[in-house]
Image (cartoon, rainbow, N blue to C red; front, side, top):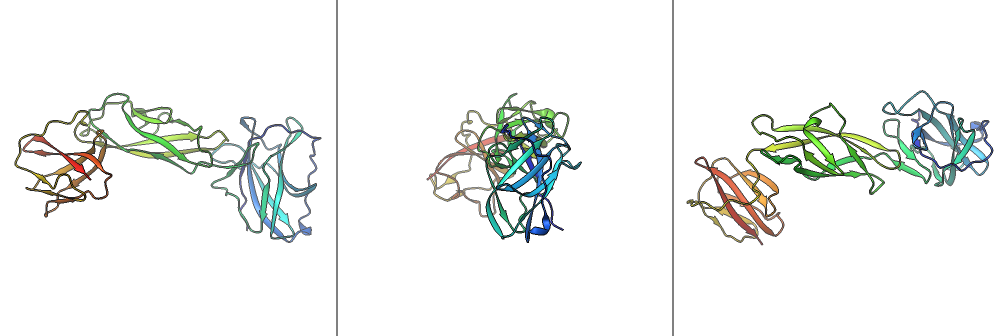
Length: 314
């Protein structure tokens, strides 16, 4: 059985005489595709009294009233089969009947027919607004997932971005009372610390972020934040007298340690941003060929004290 697609329709009123008797004679057609619609009109979801239809000229090719099915508890779905007598056909018109206003609204962008096609799915609907089809956001990204303990309140952890048809205008928020959201805050697209973190108390946090685009789509996604041991170096410490030498320095790839190091070596860029953490191999060599050209700071603990070395990557 073909699965039906989902539309979320956000529309501007282009009104004509309302037609509530839209009908399609399926026996006339050889081919079909599935459509499903969530209806979002003028900033709100519509109800089961409304209809969605697809036309080729004046001929109705598919129509459905909104059902009692919802997507993530929002809106009612209109489930459609769209018909044609050729496997491909461009320029079908999508219309929406708003029963509360007794008007028909026509969407600007047309729909292309392809036999057997599924535009979206019940699990992930597509969105139709007054200009055309929009997809729900696919993924939320965080530019950085780590923060050193002893941070400042309001310290920026990373910038949020979204994979979506829309390129800008996203609104980010933190749902209240779930996961570890109380420890964080959002300012625009920046995820910030609302707590001074302690590595010994908790090293990993889960934050659930919600994003909304301007076309009615939304996405809620869990992201992780790792707390790193040791306060970040806002001004790098002077190198202490120590027997360990790093060479060649500058280097294009291999960095040789003159002596072994116990524990992790932490690598930061010149701005103090954490890059990676590594245990020194038995051959005492680290390959930094993949790092961009620039100045880096390596630090580790030696006999209870912090040792810092500056390295230039050519």
